[in-house]
Image 1 (cartoon, helix red, strand yellow):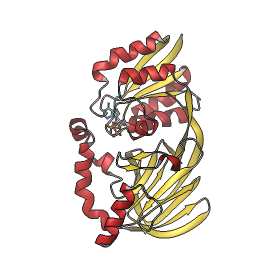
Image 2 (cartoon, helix red, strand yellow; image 1 turned 90 degrees about the vertical axis):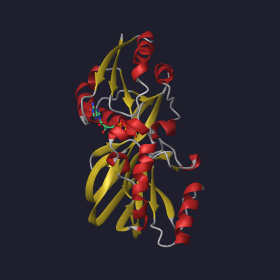
Image 3 (cartoon, protein in one colour; image 1 turned 135 degrees about the vertical axis):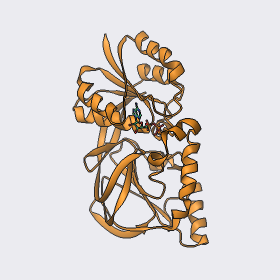
Length: 294
Ligand SMILES: Nc1ncnc2c1ncn2[C@@H]1O[C@H](COP(=O)(O)OP(=O)(O)OP(=O)(O)O)[C@@H](O)[C@H]1O
């Protein structure tokens, strides 16, 4: 029998998994997998367990939000074991799941995993840590990890909107930085910077499908300028709604290696989790590092 490690974050989202756990395990069992359940005990536990145990399994499946997936991907890459990964979205935003149009119905997501094919997925490396879909700093970037989990569990993604609304007055704040993309340096001021491999950011920003490939060994850098007057604010809103990322307010650049240097430490987020404060960050794409099954 093949061995499946099933990692579940009980604190994630408004977990639709609770009432469906038995039917999900049955899908795996019917597909001839011997299932080991691991319920994470606290933040960081999922990563540690996967890094230790991955080598004993033929497949790893995790259920939770983007933060849970981030931990499991870090665990797999730290283990050095090339094991396929299945993901059952059960978090608040599930940005990663949106990019792949993964089913939010746990039993269907489980079926897609046992019947699916591996999709080679790029991963980003951020000063030695890995992220699956975004590393970001500036406006709103701390919303996902500063929003209390209890609020997320009660209100779902609306909790992020409440928390984001409290920060909107910071939109005019900009920070000067030196951005170097594949050796080409530029200095500018921004209110938000994201390095992404995703079609969706925070469930709010969408990338046009023809702009992004999730397995091309290239990351997208979205740099947003702070609007300093109502016209610039209008232009920024228009650019976001129309997904126009090549104008005076928003710019999308593609690259493999990105360095961000600032005089003042910036707060970063990795996949919606805290990425710490940094003045010098190097981000590299790790091409096709994860085999996602769906
Ligand atoms: N048993 C646990 N108790 C509390 N927190 C946990 C536990 N296990 C994992 N965590 C942490 O819970 C946090 C939130 O998880 P996750 O990001 O998966 O869900 P979410 O925030 O609801 O969804 P999303 O990121 O998609 O918006 C992560 O930081 C994770 O490390």
